[in-house]
Length: 481
Ligand SMILES: Nc1ncnc2c1ncn2[C@@H]1O[C@H](COP(=O)(O)OP(=O)(O)OP(=O)(O)O)[C@@H](O)[C@H]1O
Ligand SMILES: [Mg+2]
Image 1 (tube, rainbow, N blue to C red):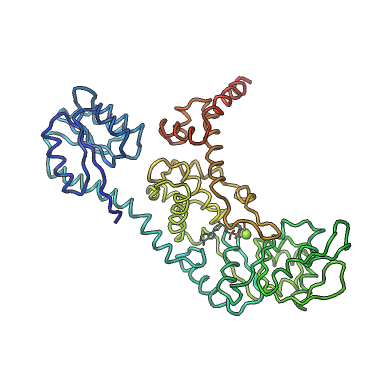
Image 2 (image 1 turned 135 degrees about the vertical axis):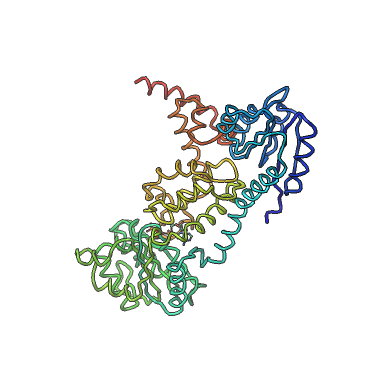
């Protein structure tokens, strides 16, 4: 499917073994490189990324265990098999500790060799295909940028398709990060006004005293600082859609005026008595329970009923876990393209971790976790290690979204972050590990789940090499204090 054959490196000082293992491996679908000694192998593996290494235990220059050690350092995901004529429990244990996945005794049993090669090849293929398959499916299951495979989201997509041609006012509810803004955009994009403006106003981001003028505009001299006439967002959205995000935060005084506009279809700029006709579709969203807000006297019931004519409810991610692998595949693909990293997917353990997490920050949290893990991943696969480092820091999803908050004028970028954010997160993350490791790069690398070489590469790429030295001094005083 990927078209690329996995690479096997065979290391043995006996030409006969190189020949026979090489022949079997090519037949099993591997590309094969051979080395006649440990030193040569370590050098080769420093330059080429192998999927599997089969290495003899005893060789005159550098032995098999040393080669295994070198593999752990340079490429922890490369699989390794130790071959030996001197089978002993101690070396077997030592080899397994060093990450060898299997042990082949000499003289080689060809049946077992064949079986083993087929097993490794299937595993490599399975991992490689996982992401391609799932992201293909994801593409097919996408609707206006939303991914949803399970029945809940499929039903929601159907509902949006049916509503979009007719809806003039809608209320979208759901926990934070469930995709309310995407739904609002989807209603607009699939409706009759798709060619017209979609204007966003984030009700939690506007100062109360400026709300009226933001929404309805003002005339010159209406208040101090109103040096000119200015149209409000309602006028800007005329003929299109106005998205009132976080409507639960709208002050009561503005709620009354908003209701009037919705009912009469006209606005008054602040300081003016002339009504102006506007034809605006209004979509509102909130993560609050508006009914409870009404009961508590914080939200006008008449406005609530006016908006609530059409309600679209987004289920939390924990109630649609079947979507997680597809969302994940799509986020991994997107992030790895952005980072230009050849990531193929997740290890099985990492998948399990994602499947069982609580996801209180919903899809946004999942996306942020995956982005961080992609940054930290040092091979083709994201493992539990990268995930577990990425997850606890995200318990407060609000912190991650602050940077991407929609401005009242609706000019915020579509995405919650960009390449800069990724670099910043990575930099901070590495700095934190170095601090905690007291400047010891080997220990920091271990904490980060990176090989030492990989850490050095990152320090260079992120221009961190000398920051670290300064950090180390500071850190020393902190530790002594
Ligand atoms: N079904 C989905 N498929 C793909 N990405 C999604 C999906 N749902 C949400 N996202 C992504 O998750 C993030 C949060 O989505 P969105 O901003 O729409 O959430 P929200 O419900 O408006 O959250 P909040 O209440 O915090 O404003 C965005 O990056 C969005 O692209
Ligand atoms: Mg939102």
